[in-house]
Amino acid sequence: MKRFLLFLATILPLVSSAQKLSETAVEDVSTKMATQFLKLNDPALVFVTEQMNRSGSGGLEIDKTMQELKKDPAAMDAALKFLFQYSDCNRQTLISNLKAMNIQSGNVFPVATYVVNKYKGETKALQEEKTELYKIGAIPKVISVMVAPPTSQAQAVTTTTLPPGSTVPTPTNTVTDQPQAALSGNPAAGPADTRNWDVRVIFQINTPTQLQQIYGKENMELRDVNDLDGNSAGKAWVIYPDTDDEMEVIFHEDSSKSIMFGKERSKWKPPFGIKPGDPIEKVTKVNTRAFKVNGFEWTNGGIVDSWQGGAMDKKGVEILFRAVNTGDPKLYDQFTGEKKFSSDNSGLKRLGVIVEKVVFTTYQ
Image 1: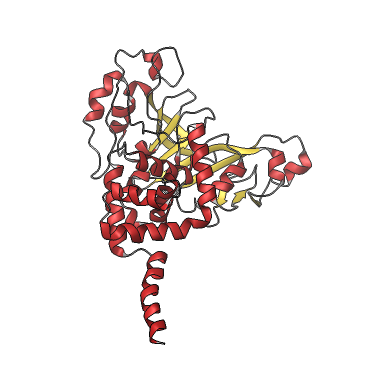
Image 2: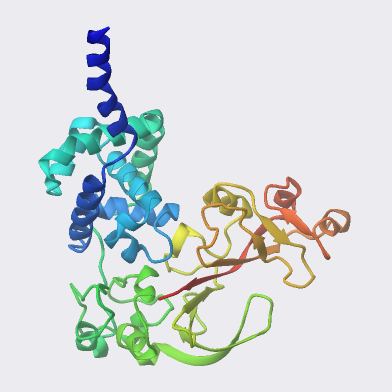
């Protein structure tokens, strides 16, 4: 009996540590990942951040999330999951990567045990996904930071004043004497387009002046804009107006910002990987569950009514959908009028329902 009790006393702490990280380990991992993230070119953190961005687990402001993981347990788990994926789901490789991040020696093995046990059922899927991501170039080997802004604004970018803790990368490999055509939203002959199209840069900006310093005053216009339902939304700064890369940025009086996309061929990399032209099936998958949409041709028609507690719930994401194939009146009528329909309804695929516009709103 004594031997059994001794065995329990030995094994229970190990089991417990595998199920939950200690506060010390959470603090350590959060601090060290933030440090590596700020280097902007650490391959492991590049992979983790890109995956956090693609999955939406980093929220709209991935920079803030990666610098404060301890405040978001779900984000912390996601970051460790993707570090495990980067480590080829191999325990020893994961331990090596944790040590490379300077995780304290007393935390390395408990963290590794926690991660391996938590995601042991997903190793095959994670390995296959990693292989595919590198194959199609969805995950860069080395991060591309903000480079080649408009030549006339290069110095301004390096002196931009941002909120404490935020980081807008400074230019590297800046192209000099770059033709104006290459700086507009339209493709043109000349140097390769090396601009950073990651939308998370916008979330760190607080004023139109900062926006102009990064993208160039000549590439922006102040215009009247509408919300997703067609009502006036006031004034917005439009980056690369009248091009495929047009993007609207509204600075609200409460310090929040709204960013709207409505072009299908845009180069921008938005949060959650959601962009105009994406089928509703993809949005359902990203949200991790079906959601509710308002019936077309009615108040708020085609706009998401509720994310139903999914990954995009309460994340400041609004989406307007439209049906491409409306030739079958009987089918289309099922989704129009004063009603709500589920995004996993089989009839939506026949209608060809896609994202028409998407808005991301973030708060300070």
